[in-house]
Image (cartoon, rainbow, N blue to C red):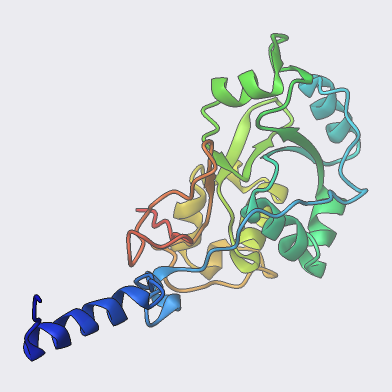
Length: 236
């Protein structure tokens, strides 16, 4: 009869015990999740009723806004974009932003992947998605601010927090591009060149904004950790 030594029997027992245990996946969650950025996830967004119901003929929209003493904003979004949700639910509910948007602007929303026909300035027809591609709209939210002479005077690629967004709105609503062509130059120039109701902030060399790319992936821009899912973009 074959005999098993005591050490071999002990070893076999330990192996069997180990195999009987459920597998435990190695955790991929960092000890400090905040250091990896915050994942907001897909969020559906209901647009406010003050958004303009447009026939998507942009020259007509600009003319109608001009007649009312306002400027046109074209807002590119995409379904499930968490930063679009943040723009609508945080920025557009901010009392100062809401006042500026309703008093000084008319906003037309365009789906980055939509199929509605849009007649661009100049008369050429596009679908929503081909217009987005033609304008190199690679991120959402993207906002284009038009002047009365149908030129884009400011483009915001990505989400800006409320205080910084108010600065952008003030720059356009007060038509400061006619005095200072660069918004960044204006922000760096000092409070003597800024409206009285505009708070000057330090650190404008590093403007924060967040954006969702065309392929539904966050972009990596000046992130503290390149695997962060909420990225910070720094301008120069």
